[in-house]
Image (tube, rainbow, N blue to C red; front, side):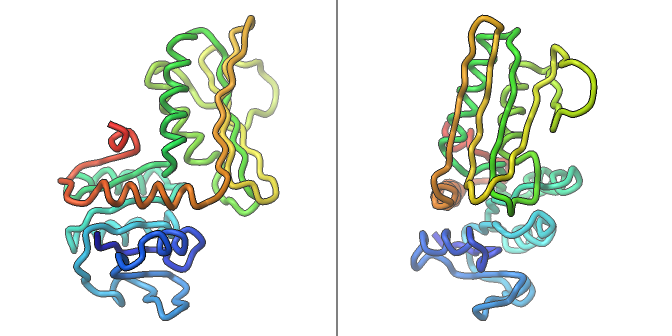
Amino acid sequence: MRAILCGANGAMGKLIDAALPGEVVGRVSIDGENNVPKTFAELGAVESDVLIDFSHHTAIADVLAYGRQTGCAVVVGTTGHTPEEKAMIFEAAKEIPVFYSGNMSLGIAVLCRLAKEAAKFFPDADIEIVEVHHTRKVDAPSGTALMLFNAIREVRPQATANCGRAGEGKRTKDEIGISALRLGNVVGIHEVHINTGTQALTLKHEACTRAMLADGAVDAARFMVGKGKGLYNMESMLG
């Protein structure tokens, strides 16, 4: 596999780089450190199979443009995209293969499946999602929390998200609360609380190190090699 890393000098970029010895053929990083090109224009066209993006959501237009230009697959590992940026991703997938997921962890993909199944078995239960991350995380709620909400909404299409509940007003029947905590150096904890009033079920995933996300990104990149145009995600990889 021939991979290009966008955000190569970042924490995740370095982990992915280390996980792909001899397979990284190009690197881009806005800081330009370590003699890494700052832009795709500086990098130039490089023969590659996949571009892995772990930079910043605002770079998505340039990332997708490079994917279109070179024809390589794109793995989007960043989160916090605006509705307009998400629309760019969906539009690009009509022309090139794009892997887009709010979380690159296989464990989170399994958690999404379990949450959806549990919601189906307890159609009238109250459901709340709690996510915990380190104090440096800039977006809230996390992309993973939104993934969980959207997975549950597949079996509860009427569900609405209440992010950061505050003020007066009791809980509505269809709402799913999403709470975000920012503490110390927590890598990532996601919990789905399901309560019927007579019993409670809690589903939990805890990331022990960021290497988990790097492993998932590498798996996604290998999965995308040779794929045709379209939008892919963790569910696609799970099969």
